[in-house]
Image (cartoon, rainbow, N blue to C red; front, side, top):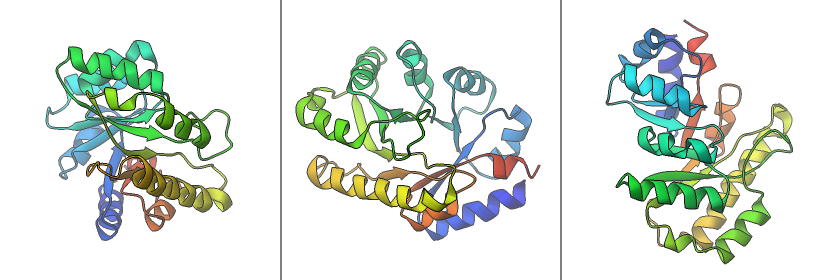
Length: 217
């Protein structure tokens, strides 16, 4: 567990990327083992798991939400998350903006873009995202801050690299066309336990790894 963690962390450091440890279904004791190695970035798929962990684990952990966010969970997500990776509609952006105002904070978000053909995966279709950025009043949502993009690759390894290349290309185009004056639009969140090495090679600034670390416990 600890050896695997340090190996992956070293690979991130060599590529200038951040390691986000996904603690899904892990006990507090298991999470603390990684925390004691210096790790402070952890993620959960579900808001209720974030709430539970945030209450029982050290307060200096930065919790990220990487799973699909429903509107009725926005209040809690804004309260406990330092970064939400799964922004997949302008309507959700509006909801998060309104809740952020109520909580007197600016919420950091990543735009999730659908890069695989898996129907179960969420995210903006590229064409819909461009249309929304051109037509919807994103500039009025001053209580949110778009930090970059997130994508989930297919389980089929032979097309994962192409999907990650597509996501990085989308990031570059968004930076050029819509976020050129936003110095904090810097993040490309892609790669999980099965494909993080490919993601690092294709420009990920943040990888989301859990099972490969905790299965070594």
